[in-house]
Length: 340
Image 1 (cartoon, rainbow, N blue to C red):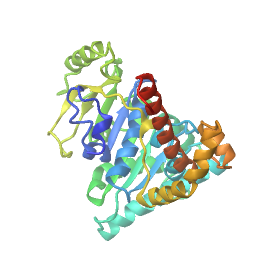
Image 2: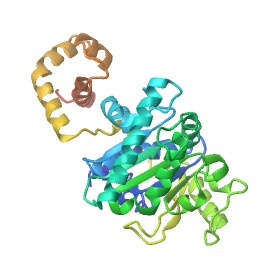
Image 3: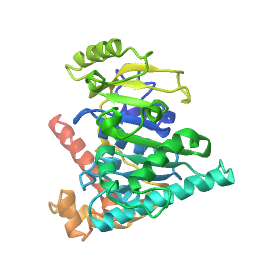
Image 4: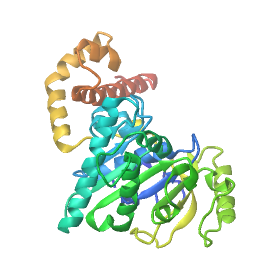
């Protein structure tokens, strides 16, 4: 219910979009640059933690940066869950440690038959670039030559028996072609899909015979044409496997609702309590600085000596947004000729 205000009321058929089960479960999101793939991956991470606050979530992203969309740019959450797949030795060592941990935790659940542990989920965006980097890193595990091999084994094993042990994996790619993505078609067929934009109209795409790609593409294009004026942010073709707790065998062309991830405010309860206490203690000081003309986050954070990486900056963001709303409200009342 807390997500509904993010979804435009006139958006058609959003049963796939507003169902948290779809986002939590394993999926393959693919599409060209600018098709909305990374935005949907970021939204998936948000919904996953919203639905499972105690989830063990590991996100690998070769292009991770300070302005990445993960968690709406929330630095605290990004630092906790997101890791850059890089040539830099220090960074790649962190990534391989996370892969080793995930692998060990997954197989420990299987060996002990434990189906009651918290959700364990691996997300990899830009898997082509990620696999290219991991293929350069030798693996200490004797069963694998490189960490690319280990991750491939993980992905296949999760699809075979992960769900009953609360283990999921989601991948972001530019294509569904194995030659480029490196993921076997048998594996991707077991996952939910979101094919963004016109990616399925590319030549030499091999799909199961029961998927009428041309008909789906015609429907998607019809929705695309209705994006002017922009009713939807983008379009996609969604395929939901029978394992999902929504309509069995769902496959349909859809519009992707507008979603401004930077507007999403997501913190855990203990963080929210801590931030609320900080705001209470510092409200009068912030109000005084605001009245003296320090009316931007940058100016206020400089005056208060708060680093953007610190949790206090997130608390300050909440309070400043409230001040801005109040200022706009006063301005509107003045312009309407009423006494403020």
